[in-house]
Amino acid sequence: MSNIDTPIIPDEPRKQIWAVGGGKGGTGKTVVSASIGILLAKAGNRVIIIDADLGGANLHTCLGIRHPSTTIADFLLKKVTSLDELLLETPIKNLRLISGANDFLTIANIPFAQKQKLIRYIRNLNSDYVILDLGAGTSFNVLDLFLISDSNILVVMPEPTSVENVYRFIKCAILRRLNNALNNSRFQDIFRLATEARGNESVKTLYDLLERVKQIDSSVAADLKKKINTFSPKLIVNQVRENDNISLGSSIKDITKKYLGVDLDYSGYIPYDEKVSESIKRFKPLVTEYPNCSASLCMNLTMKKLLNGSKLSDGQEEVEESRNEEA
Ligand SMILES: Nc1ncnc2c1ncn2[C@@H]1O[C@H](COP(=O)(O)OP(=O)(O)O)[C@@H](O)[C@H]1O
Ligand SMILES: [Mg+2]
Image 1: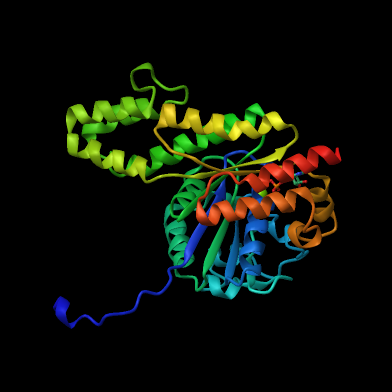
Image 2: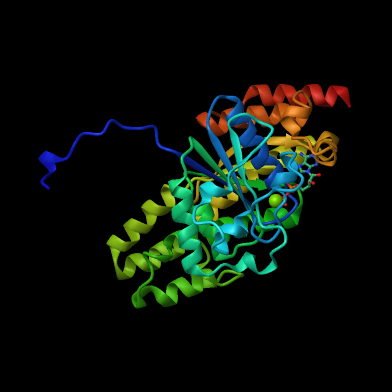
């Protein structure tokens, strides 16, 4: 069929896939994913939230579902033929859950073909938003789910281990993103040096990597640069306990730019708030159970930033000030 015969289909608003990752466990990825899903659903969007922590699922608990009747394991074990069959209603209108596989230990390491199939089905889900709550670590499964997303959200907490892990996560994600373009014997040595855990002296930063590739093929280097420039994850600092912690987001942003050439968007911070664990213990979602606690208020402000990419809002600073006054 020639182009001229192709029917003109009006542009449908495209589904958005958002992934929440960050390397370390316990930073708040699941709490943040649940809150994002709920806030998007409450704003009238159709939302599907997927517990993609294949090794340690617990998103259902944050959404108030004690015993999910189906889980993603049913799909991976071919007990169902599509992800649609796994959709569970949640206490929140417009929000449906695909629960994680809690009792299936080996599923954390799904093989390549299964991962590709999972990704294809995720892309085909019928919803305005799909939120992926990722597990810890930098396995290819986690990185690939992070990289298929339209919005890449990172959750870090103010502890050196979490900061190290989030930096390593960003580095692994960008190298994984560049992997295809460099999957050629001409670049193998350079790529290997760049992926060395402690960073090889000769390819210490991604700028070094680009320079080395440029010496071999400038058009490949230009392509890599484009891939780096269009990768702009959004950073959330969670469990903030002191004012000093707030600037951590800017420090991580500076370091990531300096060594990896990646422009992070610092989307906001969420204070440490006892109400978070209280809501989990009560099997109730944080942002509906305690909508006015400081964590929920900051989550709302962060949400606005995630949606429109404006600067860290003054409102968030006001919340922080009132929190300090309360203390
Ligand atoms: N802002 C917060 N304030 C207080 N506790 C928090 C906050 N965010 C997360 N937590 C606590 O941290 C624990 C781990 O959070 P979770 O979202 O499960 O982390 P992850 O998914 O990154 O492993 C939760 O059980 C909760 O009690
Ligand atoms: Mg989690």
